[in-house]
Length: 180
Ligand SMILES: NC(=O)c1ccc[n+]([C@@H]2O[C@H](COP(=O)([O-])OP(=O)(O)OC[C@H]3O[C@@H](n4cnc5c(N)ncnc54)[C@H](OP(=O)(O)O)[C@@H]3O)[C@@H](O)[C@H]2O)c1
Image (cartoon, rainbow, N blue to C red; front, top):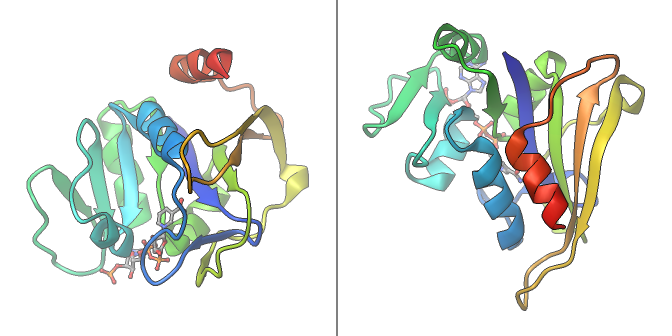
C-alpha cells in the first residue's frame, strides 16, 4: 500500500488559520476529489470537525484518542498506525493522509508520496506543514495552475516520491496532467 500525503500550503508552509483553510482554490479541491475518490482517507479529529461531515465516495478514517460518536460513513481510529492497518487489511492500494498539522507531522516519516499544492501568497496561518528534507524526495510532476474564478488562488501542484522508489502514478493524475 502506498502511503500518500495530500496537502495545500502557502509560501510559509501554512496550512490553516483559526481551524479552517484561509484561501479559495476550487481547482485544487477538484483535484483533491479526483485523486482521493474511492480510497481510504485519514484525518485528525480537528480536520474532521473543520470539514464537518464524512466526504462521500471515500472511506473516512478519523484519528482521535476520544470516544467520539462519528456520523455513519466515518470510522474512528485510535492512532495513525491503526488507521493505516485498517486500510491495509482492506487491500487499499493507496491511502491518503489529508491533514491536519498533527497528522502530517506523524505521517511524514511513513509517507511514500507527497501531493503538494503550493498556494501562491501568504495567509497568516497558525498551523504548518513540517519542513521537508528536499534530498529525500524526487519530483515526479509539477504543474502550475492559473485560477479561472475571481478571488481564487493560483498554485503549483507537485508530486514528490521518496527518492529511489519507482511508484506508479495514478491513472486519474495522468489524465489531469494531460489536460493542463
Ligand atoms: N491546507 C490543507 O491541505 C489542510 C488539510 C487539512 C487540514 N488543514 C487545517 O489544519 C488545521 C487542523 O490541524 P491540527 O494540527 O490542528 O489538527 P489535526 O491534525 O487535524 O487533528 C489533531 C487531532 O487528531 C488526533 N490525533 C492526532 N494524532 C493522534 C494520535 N497519534 N493518536 C490519536 N489521535 C491523534 C487528536 O484528536 P483528539 O484530540 O480527539 O484525541 C488531535 O487533537 C485546520 O486549520 C485545518 O483547516 C489544512
